[in-house]
Length: 472
Image 1: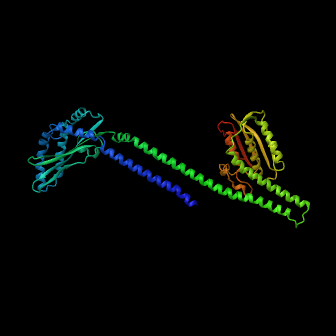
Image 2: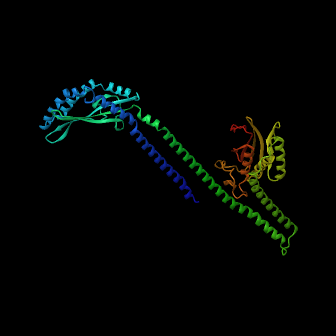
Image 3: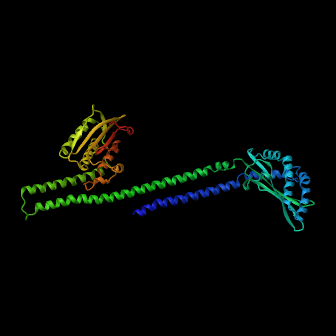
């Protein structure tokens, strides 16, 4: 899969997730609107019926009809005449008539007591509040057979409020919008509305919908987590596939070089037509031996990495200082002409639970890397001890090429070869093998670059937490 195809995946996931989130948000919003529309619809129906029974044939509240007849009706005929002769002050006159009329309604209203009685009678929630609002007054014009607007005010205009303290009247909390006609000397009709609701209506609906909100968020979180895990696994699989491909190509090259050299040397040795002296035969034999050792090292690295996954650690209580000294002595004999191995022993030995084979493999690979990635004529590796809290820390320093900071988190990956590896032979399994052994023993490793040159490895033994405050 090319890089363009890989880049499509996160974009496709991001787009799909955005669409899904918008869809869920749209559904939740519409659910909220539906709940808002139907919220307390049963209580509103009870209030409407109880209010109708309390008012009966009167206007707005008991005694309201008298206020209409004495404060409003006399103004209607005067306004009607002014309207017909085209007087310019009809609108102003209507407001002058309505102000004292509405003021008297507010003063003499008994709506507070009526509403409290309804709440008690119907066993409603005492947290309900109401608003009575005078919406519009129209006068009938017999000449044109139309209703002319005498006065009109919006529901959110406090000028039309008769009684109540509900702050947000609207369609969803309106109990009724009632129009009442009166066939007086001058026929008129008026419209008024009753709104009933909780002061914290939105919060109550949100609480009621809380399970929906939480379940939706949980579903989104699960989808994100699963998608992220799937994406990470996909990336890991792609990286692993790329590493395997790179490893196979590299291994083909690394194995092919010594095999070709061995075959050529062997062919030269058995060539009967060529006369060779003893010295030349010895040189060819040494070439074959070096290349055979190289093949053997590759084979042991690959097979060791495979066998490590199946082998269980053979943990025993062993003297740490004595064992380290013994293993490093073996490595000195093995690499005596290639690197100088220095060891600063513990002041007093200590018993440590470990697997001797794993421990030897760790030390061996560290020394091998210090030889392979070191351009110095005098290659040196130092082993010393530090004590951090309740952990013993093995400090391993060399004077090699070092490891770039941006590669320190990658060098323990199987088949990974850093930029400083160059054309040096190897399969990229050395540090991976070290990390695998450490994980099996429950140990940790930390890399630090030396101020001058080379690399420092800190191997923390035991189960205590990693402590970055190291002793120098």
